[in-house]
Image (cartoon, rainbow, N blue to C red; front, side):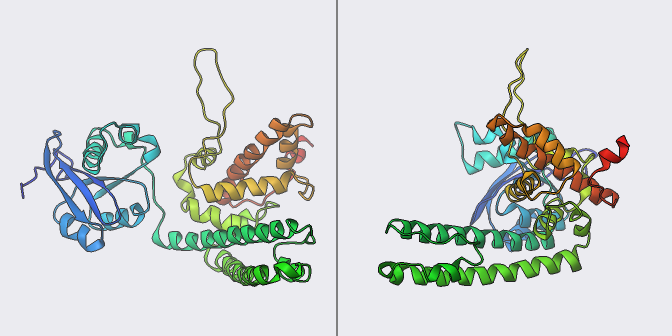
Length: 355
């Protein structure tokens, strides 16, 4: 193996670009002058990473993906400077006409050598937060499967000229069983039993979410002061952001979650575009659901609701659609502010200031 020269004043042996995959990953090591010192592949396992990168210290650039959380933690534990690149911001790689794992590794290394900011680096959450967030997402998957099964049952019954009574998803398996036509009972009763089992499992997840919110993450109580924000959304917010003070301002949370409009201003043209949809999809969906509740008939009177209703207006449907992500963005900023300051939430603070 060729001996690497350390960068002047950096204390690092060079720059590594590591392209991750399921079984074997490609890597390229560059000197600080840009010369390729070594290329190769490694087994994508903790033992494989330690075997190759346990000697010396490097600046290592990887792309965010399925394997990047545990790989970044492992490399950081070995003493390396780790940069996790945002793949959505790397057109040099994903739009390349000569794309391969080897060339991707070299491109990552060259970008990290010149300026890490070119990689739009992201910060992965800790292992415990990742495990707890997986619990919330597993619950979300069960809810989605249950919804698909309920729609299948209702559609099958409609095709026979019958209809099932309206009810909640939790009560569907019990109430629908007596209204299924005899011809469909052999095919639909097993599905109703599965729906009942899914409902029971979802209740178990809900209890665990409540326990985590009360015992492990008490800061969620600050967020739940806002009407419409429950244990699921507050816990997902805390686990996704994890460290609230890494944002310079609460306004940055809206952009972090992809709730700000895209911009393509040129000259005198300032078109209205959709939101960026960057960041965590799961938390963004929960915040939009909260916005639906806040603006809906059961939402309590508060400054956020009044602001959203003024923005939605009463005529244009497009304007009402734009109000939902806007309220979700403002809600994210409000939740971050409550988390940082620990203040008591005042729903009608604007009225109090005016008075």
